Image 1 (cartoon, rainbow, N blue to C red):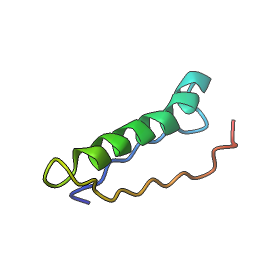
Image 2: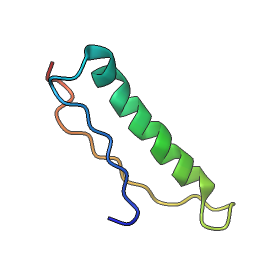
Image 3: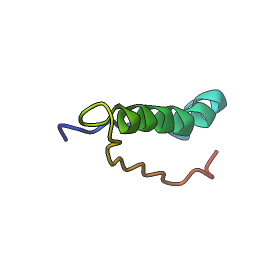
Length: 55
């Protein structure tokens, strides 16, 4: 997991944290995607969302 970022928000976390967590993960992924290997070519990134409906 050298190149892995985990953003997690559980059911017991406050509602604002549950709302912001997916957007935060996406923002981080986009940052690394557009950073690219040589600063020009975008990298491949993978975002996995699981069970966004629980509250």
